[in-house]
Amino acid sequence: MAVFLALGLNLKPGEIPSPFINKPAPVFSAPKLNAPEEKLTPTDLKGKVWLFNVWASWCVSCRAEHPVLNQLAQQHAAVIVGLNYKDAPNDAKNWLDTLGNPYNVSIMDQDGRIGIDYGVYGVPETFVIDKKGRIRHKHTGPVTAEDVQQTFLPLIAKLQAEP
Image (tube, rainbow, N blue to C red; front, side):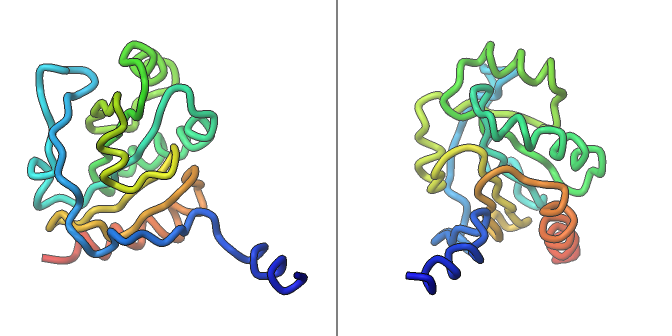
């Protein structure tokens, strides 16, 4: 039992394996939070490295990671797309107005179908998607400043350098 406890203590909860790594990102067409009459699809992002951050105004951990995302957005390293998950649009808009908006665009997933297609366990989760539309990394839980420096920025730089 001590061996299993020791192994468990060394696990990194943000690194839950995903069957989607190096596979095309699931396709969606979702309304934009600030312009619901407009839709966003992964095809709109082809040729760009982008982060897909799953968040909600009711999510305590999302609030914890939000300042980190705001700082990351200021670096303009990649496009940041927010997936507002199972949330009321007005609550989401108020949350972003109050805490700042790190997203180039945020889309709505009120019924959770997009989250299901991406294998989301809960919020927050963040995916790194390359220029060809493949998922290259999945981070479960809040993104920390350490995660940005040690994982996200090096991976983004590598993917930006790819043709």
